[in-house]
Length: 332
Image (tube, rainbow, N blue to C red; front, top):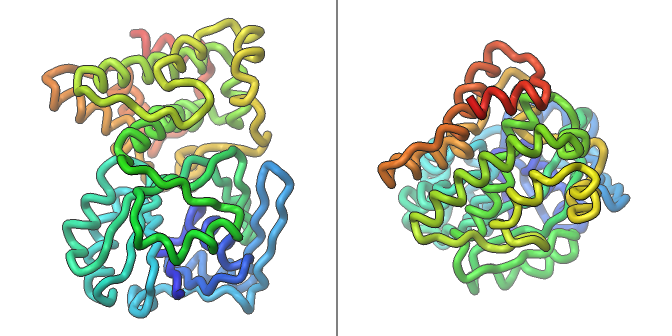
């Protein structure tokens, strides 16, 4: 059982690291910078429940060329969404026929893009519902809860026990698209958190920021209803009730949605990390996906479109936005 994590950044190092720490043979493929970091520090995997696992530097196999995936039985693709087509073309040139490929990426269309190019492999769509913070020095921290969601397939059978042992159980679904849209509804908070420049728990404790998220979600839910697509219930509260709950005064929100605030104080979004590092974000594959859906339906999505614009601006000119300031901007 040879597992390769392709595009091993924050999510890839965490998921692959948990598998490696529990004894699975894992090869990481990614950037030379990360290879050098892990060669020095190894991997440290922690979570909000108190887990603290390590993989020593000598036990981390981190490669930088696609050829390292040649003998893989299972490939976990964790590249940023904009790099999916490139990753698929690279893998198509090296993977053996019949290899199982899983997209663990943000957005809606990555699995389709991979499947179009990897015609001799079995491609499944998956989703990572939790946040991972890259703290540097090989330390990756899971700040929120969730199992790994994935398209149901018999090809997963040999790997179920390995993921269970790693503390990352696979939650299989017959139809993954409603699950993807449910996750995307939650990820609409990514640009708000990135613009706020505060930890997730602090942001969600602020009603003005919550009202920003409620506006983005309500707009998306209206479009999904027009499309005839009902998002899956992946948390305790049905997704259609989220905007109402988010708009509540803070003292009521704390009572009704305590689990949303029961997150690690270190938790941030990957989009915040991208802005901090000066990288291009995945905004086109999150809020931009809502804008595309609106266009497909002959409608508009002004709240999500404005968040796309603000993040594109922040990629070159970053500054923090207060809750009331951001809310006025989106209402305008």
